[in-house]
Length: 169
Image (cartoon, rainbow, N blue to C red; front, side, top):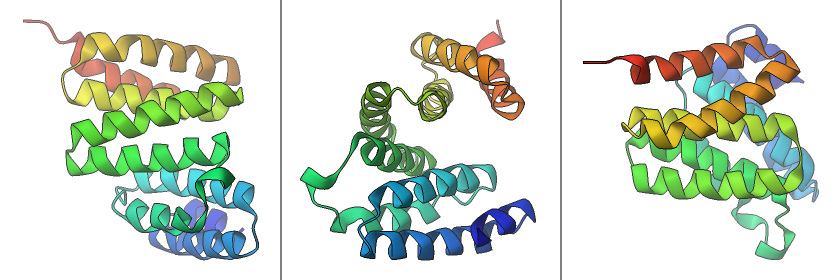
């Protein structure tokens, strides 16, 4: 709750610190679903406020979760955060690998919001490295999902991501 309040008050560092404490607590108590939800929130907050490097520490907290205890939800959220972090560092190969894992896990969940987030983030990465043709179907699918959910802010992100692709010689 404190993380949400801090984010709403435009205090991203406090929001990410609160998310860190929440993830630690949830993992100590074996609540991986709650920890994954906190990471999902932190990933969007970090992205919105140019604090993506903070995701490295947050994803490292999940190293305590054994492979057999990693649900699709957890894999999707960890991989998305790792993809955002790798993209922020300029590591295209690591970002593509992480987003591919996130996308596979998110598709298997059937949770539209998370799937749309991953599609949008992955598509934005591909646009940023000039892979417009690869990005287009991801952004199209994300846009369709966001339109059905009425997520205006995410639709604006998609439009912003497409802008470089619309520039012609």
